[in-house]
Length: 477
Image (tube, rainbow, N blue to C red):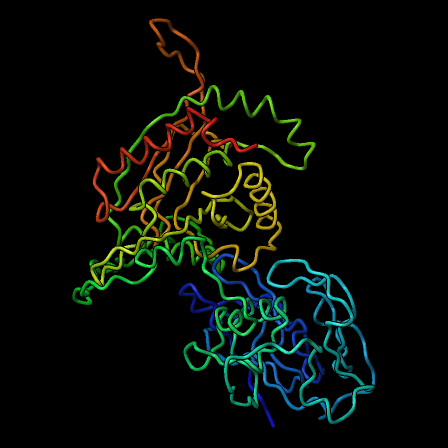
């Protein structure tokens, strides 16, 4: 019986992805969770594991093809149909797909596997196998043996693949939860992360005071306004015939560049941007960085100005939660987030990517600097997972290393504010009646004028400046 596998829901409003590599060929017999495809979403290249074991009957996609969520990628037949007696390791994403033997059986060996952009050791006990030595009765569904996950009630038996995103499957593996025993509460019976955590008996409040402050984490009971968008995108006029003035060359936009263009157009069209400019005297902060650079490096951490910027912004967001929010224009409500996940713009050869550091306000500065360095490196290496790029509440973009005296960045929709940072310069400053050279850092806070006024922006920017000028408030060494 043929079983189709479609592009799963990628979350965060993502509706399509581009096929980068097809890691199997028609006729291959593979195990559940074996590498199947590499796809590129708007900001990351992700390896999609097989949701089931069986023989690859038909591949419906090819490299560089753009596919929509719900579109069929691969059709599987039973593992016993046409399986060859030969068994070889599953190739990694770096091996050429055209070197695969279409008649062999694939069985991943113990190795360091890359899942969703993260390297993890896959022991033999956790690796699913489908091979000539597998009994015929077991080839319908071959999964790793794991402890039985607790369930909260009767779960209907599943006959096909479990609908779940790759990140949810990874979470299930980490918590030793069999997805076939989990009742999905998502659309169409899709298993969510919360379903997996509930099955593992690990549901807990996200913060210690969650039980004592339910009103801050429950939807507002205020009546919603009319479902009416506040802005309508405009249509661009037709372009002139440029060939009449000379030769031209047309270059196709990459999937990432096209997505950036669409999101920036959306932000600029929907959000009324306003920018507040300020400067911070970071003379003492720079001295602290230089003084501790080597000692911190000996602990495996690179101390940078960006880490202090993230920390200062996160602490200021706790004081000014309006800038840690999203405007629900259709409902006429402001969604204030009680967590502070800060995105930081990272320049790569492919384009600008914004990974997210979570709970920045509660992390010690050195831990934050360590996490920032590791995350930025994963992004530059093209190994960032989807979870690394989702859930941001505020963005910091530091172009100081590239120069410039200032910039007005575009808000990363659906956030409502972004902090731009330019290059710090030594300038003469009058202090206590004397002229001194001080290191001044230009800042620009761009925010959504629908949710905050100029005075609000000035107060929020001042809260950031105050912490940068008094770095002992953020140290936590």
